[in-house]
Image (cartoon, rainbow, N blue to C red; front, side, top):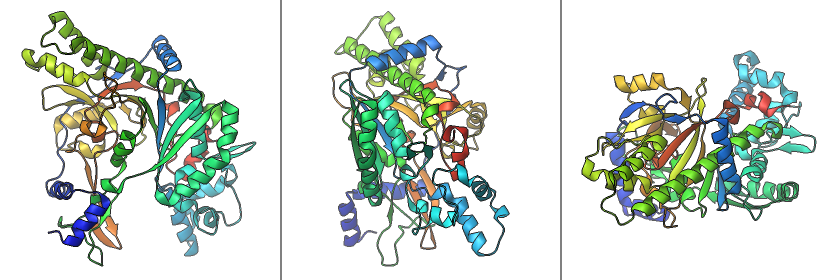
Length: 484
C-alpha cells in the first residue's frame, strides 16, 4: 500500500508506519461509543457545588501554594470562522445582494463603532483582507478584542493580565505557554515584545512566555470516501493536523506541577475579570488539595499487599466522593490494587457551567471496562444516539464544558507523569472535509479534554456562567463583558 516515498514522508514527519496503519483501521471500523452510566450532575455527586466557605478555603490554598504554575493557552486557530458571516456578506454585496441576507453581518455594520478595530471606510475589506487588517486570516490571539483608554487589547494581552492575577509564583514569575501556528510566530513574538514590559511594570511580575508549535508527528492520514489513503495530484499522501488532542504532546513537555488550561478566545475586559480570577484560584486550590491527598494515600499504602478494612473503605470513599470512581463492583481481593492504580494518575479539576444553550461537550459518568466508573467530558459524536440509556443521560445533562481546567501532573514520588500513557487511543473523531475540491475523510486524535485525558482523576466543580465568555463570531464582541 505504501511506497518508499510514502515511508520517507512518514519518517520526515516522525510518524510511525504502525500509527498510520492503526489510523486506517479506525477509518474502516470507526470509534466505539463510550458506555454512559449517567450525566454528571450536582444531584448524583458528579459535579460539586462548593459553598462560599469551601471556595475560600481553596483560594487560600492557591494563594499559599509555593510550587510551579503554568498557564497553557491553545492559540493556533485562525479566526476565519469568527468572520465567516462577514465573508458571506462581502460576497453578497459584490453581487449586488442585500445585507439583510446576512443578519450577523448587518448587526456588525449597525454596531460598527462599538468594535475596537473600528474604521468606517470599507470596513468589511479592511477587516478581512490583506490590504487592511487581514483579520480573516489571523489567529484570534492577535485580533483587537477590547478597547481601553490607553489603547486596544488582544486576547494575548488579556491572558497576560489573567496570568499575573492567578498564576504568579512566589518569585514573581508568570509562566505561560501558547500553542501557535508557525506562520503566526513572528506576529505573536512582535506583539509580546511590544507589550510585555508594560504589563510587567503594572503587575510587578516577570513573564516567562513560550510559543510552541503542534508537532507534525501528531498529524493523521486522510482517506477518500472509500477509506483509501488520499493522495494529492502529485501522488503524495495527505496528512492533516489532528485537532486539539495533538496538544497533549505540548502539555507533556511543560515542566510545572500545576497547569492551567484555557482557550484563547475566552477572555473579558478587565473590569469584569474578578469572577474569572476568583474561580480560577478555586480550581487551582482544589487541584493542589486533591493531588496532595492522592500522594498521601499512595505513600501510606506503598509496598503493602493488605490494609485494614477501614483504610480500604477510606480509599474507596475518597475515590467515589471526589472522582465518581466506584469500586464496588471490583472483586474484594482486587480492590486495593485497583485503588492504588486509580490514585496514581494525573489529576484535573474542571469548571462546569450550567447549560443554557451554549455549544460544547458535557460532563458524564462512564462505565469502564474494569468494572469501575469515571468522570469524562464527552462531545456529541461520542454518544450513541441509538442507545436509549445514553440518550436519557444526554437529556438529563445540566452542565457543559467551557474548557476551564487545572491539571496536576507530578506523581507521589515527585516525578512527572508521562501524560501520553493516560490517554485512550480508542477514542477520536472522523469528519468529512475537502482538499482542492475533492471530498475526503479526516481523523482527529482523542480530544485534549476528552480521550486524551481519559485515564486521569477528574473532578467537576460548578463555576458561574460569568467565567465563560468565548468569542465564536465577531458580534460576540458586542456582549457586555467585551464592552463597557
